[in-house]
Length: 223
Image (spheres, rainbow, N blue to C red):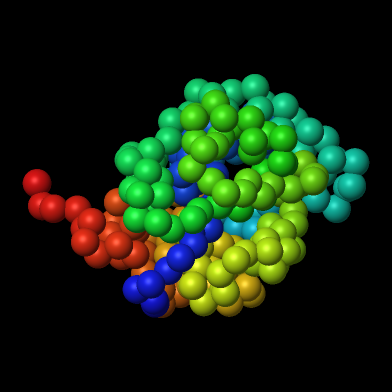
């Protein structure tokens, strides 16, 4: 883990945006439609995995039917985009992003969300100006994050070992590994801490703790 990073790659959903509760509400609409039992946020954090279709299968939904998968994604995206502004940012998001900029590090967003949705969300939460790039996907299926990361790292003015990806899932770790960047995970998102710790990388409970790991001079002081 380097102490001289020059660039931070942020995951969006679950890492900066606190939206797990909304995802669970939408999933439960999908499950009810197919006469399947609902889940809780705790169960979601214990069970969610990539790709999303595999998780849908775990819940009992039929992912072998292409038309049904398309319908599931359409229903999910319709409800999510209609309600995402009900969500809040995780604690200290603006303060942390501002601190990173003041420290002279560049930062971008990398997300599995559709590009247009991502740009709109960041604008809504007044975050756009913090980032040099906003990297979403060209599909509504949550696919392509790894490929986008590889393209992004090729354009980065700094080598991969001078970048760190901050996310909240195993997939974020996989992406960081694939592009040769370090990774820090936060436990307030889609995965609970117990699922992240076995990876053997830093797992933090808040954005402030994550940034303190990168900028030690800004370590949160005890209350």
